[in-house]
Every structure is written in structure tokens, then in C-alpha cells.
Length: 350
Ligand SMILES: Nc1ncnc2c1ncn2[C@@H]1O[C@H](COP(=O)(O)OP(=O)(O)OP(=O)(O)O)[C@@H](O)[C@H]1O
Image (cartoon, rainbow, N blue to C red; front, side):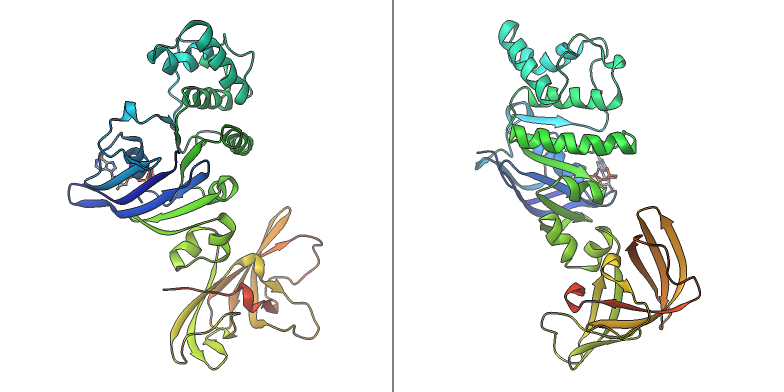
């Protein structure tokens, strides 16, 4: 049992409240990301789980046991930070063996464990190298092996990939996911990179100013954000505000329908639509669903996809993301119509 739970965890630094009665569950054997903007409290929550920082209030529970008062070296936590902090004068094998040696495991037993850990991170044969003879990605894999070798119950990762360049980072994301799956470790990953959180996680928890505002599977929270903060932080979104009238929401951009039940007539509501759910219509009859008028302002070409920046009839900016199957289409200045399905219209709670 190694699932982690935090219950009503609070932390203040002076007058500033950093965590405000946070409740969260990190299921056993799963990969959970803590995603939030800078200063939202992600690192503080991770450090409280690891035992590096004591909370002002609340409990930390690992595997069903309250560990709030248990010191960090007894919690059996593996941790990897953004800076890998390998010991430069030690070899790869010595770096990985460090935690084992401290627990009194040496000689052949330690060598076998180190061999297994290096195999898991695909660094077999690198035993005798020093950190400076390794690439950034390899060093980060040594740091992972060092964290995993002692068989922790929980693996805590604080932006471990953020120092790597884009391509290496994407490779390491795939590696990290594989290592987590093969090791079966309960993993909590701090990041402010939404794409990274979506790619890696079984569950994503979104933090905003010291509170978890939404938690769920990546596709679930991306497709069904609850608030405008969650919609805007996790990806791009077009927002429309209006008032419920009959079967539709009356907005300055035009009437908009949703798939589910609407609140009572007269209620002011906000909906969000993801840019890739919208289509620029070519000539022909309007499809069923939502259709609004817009003016194309700018096309940002990015190879596989283009972003169309438009203005609605109310003057608000609208973004549409489209795959470049062919490049024929309207030019900036054109009057166009935008269509999307009522099911892709998300009714927000704020
Ligand atoms: N030891 C400390 N003393 C005082 N304030 C602190 C301390 N540690 C963190 N803070 C403050 O607490 C807030 C949350 O910090 P935290 O590092 O948890 O945020 P974060 O979401 O991880 O941000 P980032 O993505 O920038 O690392 C910040 O405003 C930070 O300045």
C-alpha cells in the first residue's frame, strides 16, 4: 500500500497563505501531476508530502498510515529535483549506490540492485562514468535510478525535465512514463507545463493559489474544465458570455447551444470552446449545431497546424486551430463562418 493522501493541509509563510486546506489523493501505482502556475504551491505541497517541510495544519497519509510526524528519512520517499545534484566526484554506480550504502547495503547485494536500477533507466554499461561525461538526459536518468534503487514507496518529481532542451525533454517524458509503468511506483510530478502533465499522467490535479480546483484524467479535465481558470490554464479556450434564453445562450457573438441541460432562463453564463473543435466553413449550407459570423485577421502557420485568429461580430478574439491538410482557404480580411458542435461547448461554473 503506497497511495498518498493529504487532508486539509495548510501552510503559511508569514502573512501569505501558500496552501489553503488542500485535500488530494494520489492513487497507488499511478502517475499524478500537480499542475499550476508559478507560486500556486506545487513545490510546497510536494515537500510537505516528502517530509522536507512541515505543514501548519492537516495530515499526510501514506499507505493508510498517518506520517505527518514521521521524519523524512523514515518515509521511504524517492525524490528527483530539477537540478540533478549528482555527486560529481563519484561514478554513476557510486551515485546510484549512495542511498543503499547509507542503509548498510554494500558489496554484491548493492551491485545487483544498482545493476537493476541502471537497466530500468537504460544506462547499463555506464557504471564507471562520471556525471560530467554524461548528457543532461543521461544525468537525469542517473538521478532517477538513484531515487528508485532504494525501493521507495513514493516517487516525488519536482520539474525534473525542465532543464532539458525540447527534444530531449520529449524523449525523457516517454522514458519517464515507461520507468514509472515498469516500476509501478506511486509517482507525484510537479510541473507548470500543461502538455507535459497531459502526456504523462493518469491523473492531473490543477492548483490555483493554494487550492486544488480540479482533479481528473487528462482527457476528462481538458474536455470538461469546470472553471475559466482551468479552461484557460490547461490549453487554449474561447470564452463566450451570455444569458440563457429558451433553448440557447444569447451571446453578443450569436446564439450558442450546448448539449446538456441549460440553467433557468435569464441566468448569466460563460461557456468555453477549444480552438480545435471549431471549423472554418467554406461556402455551402450551414451544418446543424453552432454557427457564428467572424472576420479572419491572421493565420499563424506552424507546419502541421495553423492557428486562425478571428474576431467575432462582437469584436472579441476567437482562435481556431486547424490541421493543414491543404493550404487553400480564406485569406486575412475575409468574412467567414465558424461552426462547432453543441457537445463541444463547455458550460463553466464561474
Ligand atoms: N521557504 C519559504 N519562505 C517564504 N516563502 C516561501 C517559501 N517557500 C515558498 N514560498 C512562497 O510560497 C509560494 C508557493 O511556492 P511554491 O514553490 O510552492 O510554488 P510553485 O507552485 O512550486 O511555483 P514554481 O512553479 O514557481 O516553482 C510562493 O509565493 C513562494 O514565494
